[in-house]
Length: 321
Image 1: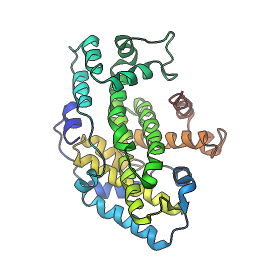
Image 2: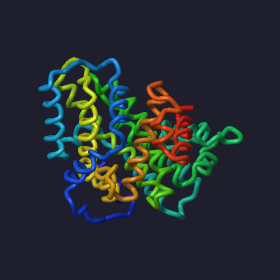
Image 3: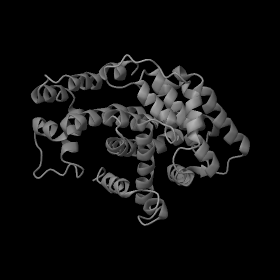
Image 4: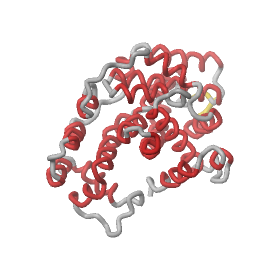
C-alpha cells in the first residue's frame, strides 16, 4: 500500500511538522465521548470479555505503545491493498477517462463489478429502477461515490482478514464501524470545508490500528478473549488511533489524512480532523442503537447531535439494507 494513495491524490507533500505520535496522544483524550467509547468497546468485545488481572491489561497497552514506535513492523500485521484499486483511483483523477473506460476497468474484477452494482442498487442510493449495467451504476454513483466505494473495497481485506482468536471475531464488527465512519465523515466534511474523499480515507484508516491492537491482545491473552474493563477499552481505542496515524504515515498517506487521525477530537484540530471525529462518533452511535445498547431518544443522540448529524445517523442505517 505504501506510496499509492499519495500518488493517486497528486501529492508529494511534506510530512507533518509536529511528531504524529505526540499529536495523537494529545488528541486521544478528547476523542469523542468516553461513555460512547466504553459502550462501543463492550459491544465489540461482547461475550469475549473476561476479568483480566491488571498486569495483563498493562502488558497489552504497553505492547501497543511499543509497536507505535515501530510502524513498519505494525504495518506488516495487516495485508496490502489489491493493485487494481490504485489503478482505478488514478483513472478517476483523469477527467478525460470515459464512463465506458472505467466500466471496462471495473469489469476486470468480478468481485469489484458485483460491489459496484450492489452499491448502486442499495437503499442508500435508492434508484427509481434496478441498475443492471456497469455504465449506469458508475453514472449513478458519480466520481466521489465511486472513489469512496473503491477505497472501501481496498480496505476490506486490511480490516477483515484474520485467522484466529478474538481478532477474527471482532474483524467484521470493526469493518462495520469503518464503513459507517467513512461515510459519516464524508457527510460531515461538506459542512466543515474539508475534502470529502480524504475524510472517507481517514474514516477507513482509523480502525487499522485497532485491528493490530486486537492481534496483540490475542498473543497476550491466549484464550480468544479480551479484558472486560471499560477503562482498558477506552484506553485501547485511544492508543490504537495513535497506531493508525503512525501506520498511515508509514504508508505515505496524504499528510492531511495522517494529521486528521492524530488530531481527531482535539479542540484545535483541522477541519478534516473534526469531520473524522464527528463521523466516528455518529458511526459508533449507529452501531450501538442497532445493537439495542442506546435508544434513538437517548440523551447521547438527542442532546449530543445536532439536526444534520441526526439525519446522518439515520442515513447510516441504509448502508446495511
